[in-house]
Image 1 (tube, one colour):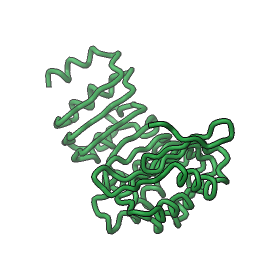
Image 2 (cartoon, helix red, strand yellow; image 1 turned 45 degrees about the horizontal axis):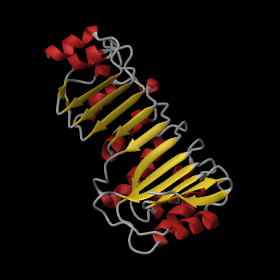
Image 3 (tube, helix red, strand yellow; image 1 turned 180 degrees about the vertical axis):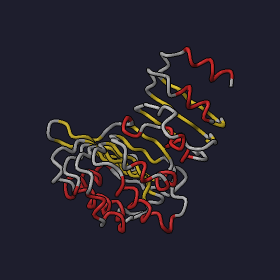
Image 4 (cartoon, rainbow, N blue to C red; image 1 turned 135 degrees about the vertical axis):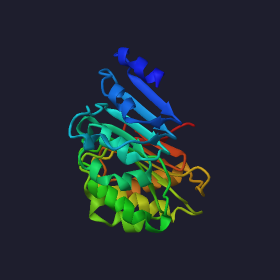
Length: 252
């Protein structure tokens, strides 16, 4: 714990990362006093001790605009230590987001990145609906995993409850040969009228598509023409950008 106690004098720390650590309340006591902290990340960490909010307000909440957590245990202890209203950018696992959805609803997030594939693909769509129903309407940038083709998700009203969304990245479990699934997904995002950027890719290690630039341009013109702000589309690594009123290929 010596390295943590030493941080009490490092008021100018802006980024702080923990890897394979056991995080206790003593850590939170120090982190909460880092007044310049802008980004806090945890990878393969375990959070122990009772949540900070059980201490009847005795412990300060951590005020940080950007929080990243990857493959951690005891996430409820982490979210209890974070000032939800101060948070703007969040990266976390899909299952953790489902378990902490009520906490998500208290944030004013603008950017949300769910960085794990579905733990249980069978009920993945239902869990995603639950998460989307809890995220604040302030969300502008989002990356989420989806089942393919995910029609159960896209037909739900929660999919439309993001009025400020401008950048959307979908990571599909599998995108089988042919572009039917991609067409269905493109059709579903038409409800996001302010969308500026859209990316659809398969998760690493899962089945992807080979899509030509001509096919991407066709999907954009035929299916996404109502999105007047859209200027970038990437389908499985084939990207096009709107330049001077024309869609052109983006060189790899």
